[in-house]
Length: 160
Image (cartoon, rainbow, N blue to C red; front, side, top):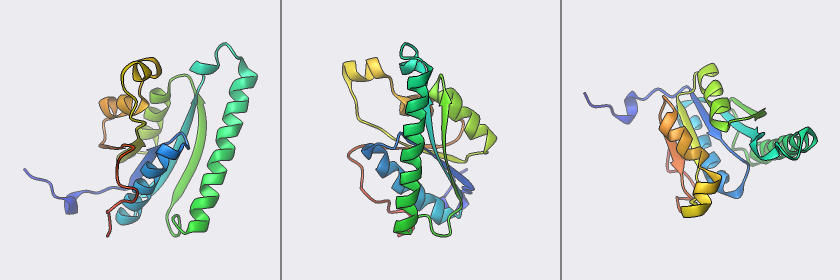
C-alpha cells in the first residue's frame, strides 16, 4: 500500500520549541504545514527542572517566566507578520522534569498528528553531555516527526 501526500490528514501540528534562533526555522515550517492542512498549531516549550535542581525553585520560576515572556513575544511577532492569520493556534510554556515526558503528554492529550522540532546540530561531547531532545522525540513519538536542522531551508516549500 502506498501513501501519497494527498492521503495525509494532519489536523494538529505541535512545535517543540525553546524559542532559540535555531527553532525559528522549525516554527516557520510548522506554520506552513498547519496552514496547508488547515491544522491547529501548538507551539510548546517545556522548561526542564533538571538544570535547576541545585539552583532551587526561584531559579526555575524565573526561567519559566522568562520562557513565557519569550512565548508572548513570539506570538506577537507571528501575529504582526500575518503568519498566524486565520490559523488556530495555542502557545504554551510548561514546567517539567523530563522534556520528552511532558511533550508526550501533550501529543496524546491534543491528539497531535505531526511534531516539528529544530535541531542544534550538536555533535560529540556536547551532544553527549546535553543530550538531544529532538532525538528523544523522533525515537519515541508514535506520530510522524519532522526535524529541521540548522542547515535546512529558511522557508518551507509546503503550499508553494
